[in-house]
Amino acid sequence: MIKKVIISACLLISFVSFAQQGTASPYSFFGIGDVRFKGTLENRSMAGVAVEQDSIHLNIENPASYASLFQTTFTVGGTFATSNLKTSSQSEKAQRSTFDYLALGIPMGKFGASFGLIPVTSVGYKILNDNSATEGAVSSQLDGKGGVNKVYFGLAYKITKGWNIGADAQYNFGKITTTTVEGISGVQNSTAEVNTSELSGMNFSIGTMYQKKIYKKMSIFSSLSYSFGGDLNSENTRVISVQGDPDPYVYPVDPKTLKIPSKLSIGLGVGEARKWLVGANMAFQETGQLENYYNQAENVKYESYSKYSIGGYYLPNYNSFTSYMSRITYRAGLKYEKIGLIVNNESIKDVGMTLGAGIPIPGSYSNVNFGIEFGKRGTVSSNLVQENYVNFSLSFSFNDRWFVKSKFQ
Image 1 (spheres, rainbow, N blue to C red):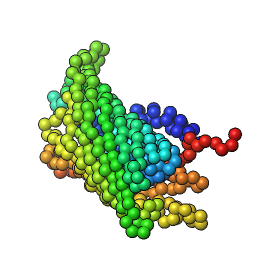
Image 2 (cartoon, rainbow, N blue to C red):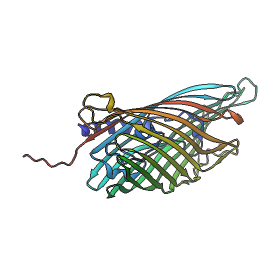
Image 3 (cartoon, helix red, strand yellow):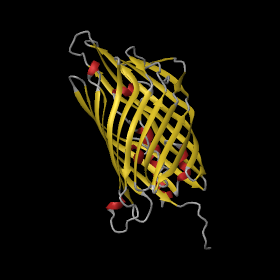
Image 4 (cartoon, rainbow, N blue to C red):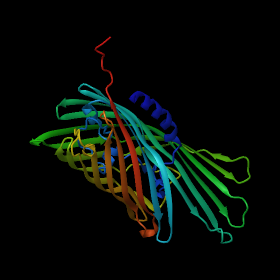
């Protein structure tokens, strides 16, 4: 059954992941867009805390987790995002439905492997500067779309009962297109400029996870992962055209090499496996070189990224035969994030709260996960935009036994 689900999902998502516009944030203009992937929904519902060596859920953020899988695990998730974008004088609403990730984890004794497809960043904005009421004034409209995706393959090994190590390789690819249309009041024809960047590059990650029982059923959990920086090659084109002119002018633009920054994530938690967990996670990322020729701005600077999260889960009784509600996993978390962008001397921050629930599918280790995230990003100070958002997420985690030799012929 799980194999049929995987094939159907791959066919659908291979189209959706490239066609979608995954954000409506004006801040996605900078760099290579908004960071989209922040963990599977199980971890994201705990604000990104992912320290336990889970045997039935896939943790894509730390490759060491793959060695703890009990069964072959296929997971896929998506989000319906709503946001209210406001300045000191105006406000607009936006909605997006997006695919978040697709991944498969395979246990192989002391080894574990995983591969999948993940949208990493998204560009999606429409900024209008309307001065048409003023004779001779310039009006403009700026549109952006696209983003960066990655396919990855990882391998992990269980050194001891509580200690895993792992690594994965990631191929990043994508396309970003920005369109600027300008017109002068009283002049009939407008001018359009279209910039396109084809992006590709590799980078690698390593990780380790350790857990140890400290008192009766209580254990301590830890996670450490490091993503190496890498190059992201950008093949660029620029096309300028005048309305009504059938022959646009193609400007030659040199290719550019962007730099993906390295990232360190540290997590620590305490709890009872399959019962409860309370944990914290910290992530730090260097300042990359992701500015391209078409999105440079004098009022913008980049800084190091950082994120602080606390969260956990509670599972009343995972093997209850009398109460289905007792087998539901309840999750929650809080986060504080500096996204690495400074505009008009304001450091852009993202503060939010997450809630979620894991609903077991009877007769299996599979489950359906629901999550909701409330948050605020940016500020109305310094003539900037504040985004108040609510994200509704859904994921499926299917578990099955593969590669089992039949005992009967």
